[in-house]
Image (cartoon, rainbow, N blue to C red; front, side, top):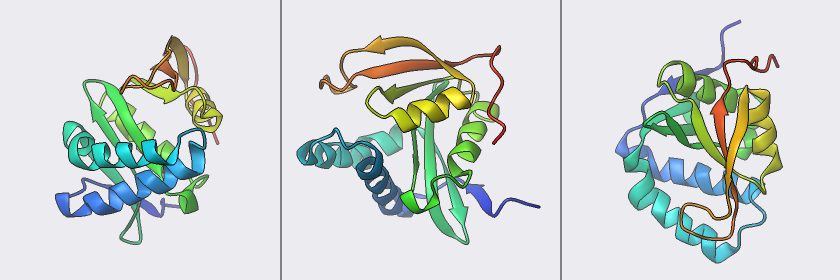
Length: 155
């Protein structure tokens, strides 16, 4: 049975939808971030981060339901709309990033155990840790690399 999800390159006109998915996803999974910081990051995503990566989005019936951003072999962002979590959207985006865009590294917030579990399940391993996030705030990051020795998840 073919997947109901299709991958596309988003256009600039899709940025508002991408930022909306980013914010909904962050609010659902990053409960450790204060409101003011989410708003600051939201502006950074819209004004800087989306243009700094190669973007791919996942659509279901013409509606964007998730997206990933890759640059220099690094998955810099992967976000799925909460209504689509657990349906294979994240896996489809991650496999595209690793198989087609040659990404084999990523960072994940240490305080986001669901994302960490997902990446571990998909064959990534923790290879380092930073005490702060990319903006120097006290939200530790785990640095991960795709392990050739670990099989990817089968579910």
